[in-house]
Image (cartoon, rainbow, N blue to C red; front, side, top):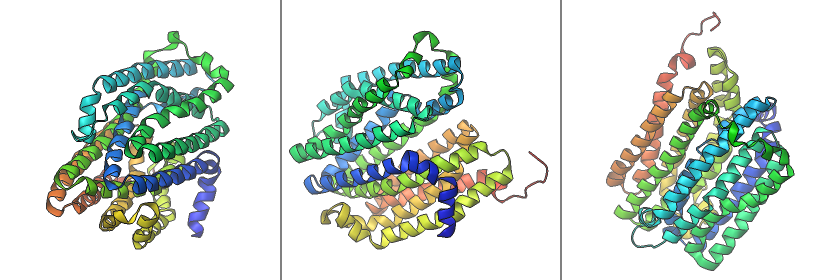
Length: 433
């Protein structure tokens, strides 16, 4: 425990507390309350349909901002003292975001019926919800692009305030809608709450009026777009592929096994999301910046081993506790209706453990701009996740979905270990690289 606390205190806590820890805690708490409301008032079948809309919303939102969030933060931080480069990055970001947002909104609005059938089947008629998403998409995009700019300028205090107020506002709106309209209320809340947060962000933008003056059409440049493009491609690929694979798997479960069973699987995935938020935040706040600064094999190996020795054992301990108390967790976060999901935990938890082990090394692809390697590996992951899910679902029933999750990330981890074998296990030369 001492090594874990030292790791956090020395490398992470001073950043995470200021920027992310409070927001993450509120986000997880709000998500847990909403999940409980869905379980109580809507049930397992509604949980499955809501999962499909959440995944689709994630994909559309990523396309609407061109996946540029991380790239914008990075380049604004780099060029904050260079007015010309800064103006080009911000102006190009808004121009590209404007085009992609209205393209995405157009597709959603005028293909709402087809999208509704894909997400909810012919048994439900929620095309109007997809149309609402299309109409509100520009507000979400403005919010995220503005948020990324303030993040790049290190406006930590206002970011935390916006995040906290946004989480609380989203929670209240969602609870009221679920209380009044059950499933339809939950679905509507998914498409309107991201846009509502823009009202809060707008106050932050007006408070920092100097940011608005940086947006000029004449400063839109090809060179700025080229800098953002790799981050855009990687982010869009990841943000679209994972949600759509999950939708396809969930649709297969609903068709071949049952809608209620798809809800059990979705519930376990939601619980998984909660604890993975903290681990992912830790990797983004510390591991990625450290790998970004690494220029030699010895330091790269040391950083990976340090994470494995200081963090992974405690993450494993938390997963073991979750498994041992899974019945109580289901009763607390969900309802007794979801108790059949107990059988899904062992494979889900094991898969998540392997996923974290793999992802901390895979960050090196992004840190060293090895985008082609990362994209090829991600495509492999998505393909193997879908194909193995269909196979194991046919063989083992619902449990097959979580077995596929574990098997897919195990193969992913093995490939990453092979690719980085010399850096992680080979003899390190005394000569500088």
